[in-house]
Image 1 (cartoon, rainbow over the protein chains, first blue to last red):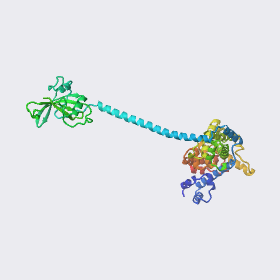
Image 2: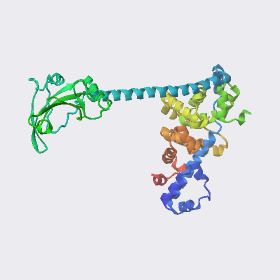
Image 3: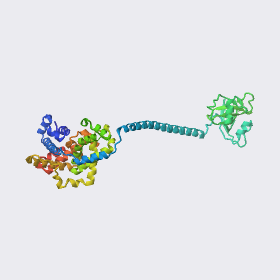
Image 4: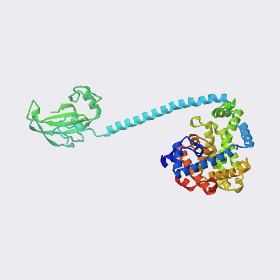
Length: 259
Length: 200
């Protein structure tokens, strides 16, 4: 046994226990006999244990005087104690209160969660409505914003309005150069409903594809396009002017031949 | 009948207004509380005050005792510890400890055999002074474990710390006690400085 092992073993014992240690731990005692330092330490701990034992024995009979007991008992008698029978229901009440409190807190949490979800969804819808509609990614056509072209388009006027911006775009269709005069205008919701409700509406728009009203939410644009003459089967000499309704997703909903 | 009840049962009965139960609990627990306060403060007056305050506290706040957190005995030691601390702050216990008249306090010295009694009382007085001169947290560990013979677990419960903390405090306190006893009466006690050095 090393000195460190000896100290570790001895540390688990109090000085009184060390003092009473006889032959239970022969290894430790043998080390204490061999090692002078550990022997002295053990001796000092035994002496300390003996001294503490003396102090403990001397004060073993010490206790508070009778006046303390009288004072405490007097205080006990002055203390108002409620009968134990009356306390039983009171003890049950807090448990019920705690239960109802638990459900109340749960209800508060649910309402708060619903409010948070509602606010989140409302903000998202509001943001979607504020965002710019997706422009149609039509080939050989550039979207422009005329100021009064919607009225013109809806009235069937083949000429683009003076105030509308016109832009020539180059594109290829079937290998030929195509000229497109494009004008676009915001189309009110009423037009969308007419266009999607019937195959041909009063303004002459022909629905090009099946359109679910739920999908076709939002605003559409009316775009006037000039198709190359080769696209027309009737007369290939003159370009064909057509109005198309483009949804905010960029897909064409309906089309009307102007000339 | 009441003597067979546990401390927890007696406390519950006492708080329901049973005076006999309270008396039984007081008589069972007052002496350890008193001795703890006596060893901590060195003053029988402070010890009596603390004992009274501890049981008055038990009357007023006893319903706050939680059996799951420990035994009544450890709870009382914890309360006593706080009252001792307050009393010592109030009365400047350092002055009390060094009062010459207090060394001859009859409550701390027994006179049994006149021949052996002198050496015994000298030893007791020297150890008492050494214990009282320890820092408070070391003194608490020595008083509870060495003088009140509480287990490390019960002492840790009373002082609100880990068992390892109690061990280390005791180790350090014993080292300090050996040194103090060496300096006070090395020839009589037989303490050597090498022994203290071995620990450090």
